[in-house]
Length: 484
Image (cartoon, rainbow, N blue to C red; front, side, top):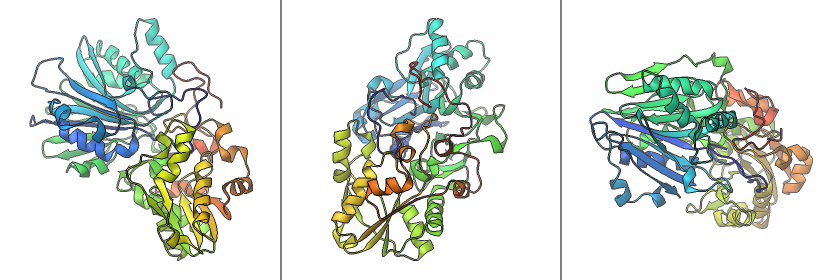
């Protein structure tokens, strides 16, 4: 879902839709920040491969002047030395966005830039609002005209409206986020301040970094290392931070809840985030190693080799091998120049994408009993093809292990897990799934293991249990009813 919606009637993807990535940079020394944002977006490319954009402003330059550029495509496809060179400013925000069928249009790319009576705003958003339809209708009844179909524009409008009666832009952001419900990490560029906000449940990650006189807000800590910055801390769930030369890092925690009520998305640790990132003090790499070890303890199998489905299954496969004593190996050659299969909007291109993306290595698997680790199964189509690929390459047995529990419920908070009828685990028993995949055995991570993956942090498990941290919405931003 991210900042988007799934068009009714379009086929659901067989792999999870990615979230989005956001970054904000402010150089107090007045140096240009466009290149830092560009390289930061490179580090966040795994979070969104549909579109990207950068907006910058010169805090000492002409008022209301914001340079921006955004388009469909990967970061290195959208930006070149010419258009990047035209982005001049010491404060800016950037965004990468994932793909959904039917909504892949340039108008929905971010950052959003608003000119209003108090000045300008640049906004980048990762997440999904559950009351976007209600808020949008309220704005439309008072004359607002929307240019996009994303709920990020609803947030931007509310910030602009609140600014009219607020002493500061950060006060306007706090007032606006009090009205919105759901999952969000925001970076907001005003003429003289960089602001970050994270929802009270902490669904989406957001971290603070620093390099000399430059401050960074970004979705994942891995991007800080890419641009030579040091990690300072995570933005806390419910916190709004304001960065300015006069005040440094200032914090508003009025929206923060007790730690027990927070609900981080567990799929940041299982799949979305990069291995070298840390989220709320927990290593993503360590979480995936633990998942593999738990699978080995709870669901052992006699085998000759443990392999992962690249790339998200590799660390869990290593963990399984470490715990079981079965050798870890490589069974697939991945074409690094092909985007993730889920960004293909049509079933035919997804089907072709599996073999274009992966090839089994016959010499590695021929005659062997293989344990294969993947992060999840949505519809089962891709998993079935991977099992078939291994057996066609000569594998004697294929035992599939999944480093997450079965999906039984949709997600409303930014991970595009589809309607229940499209989820293979909702429609089939474990044995039926195993048979459909063609695997010799199948096991998932146990739900009760999830908190152990993240050192006891409070997490959202709604897609596995149907118990959400807040009441799910009844309709999306267009007024379409959700099936629950």
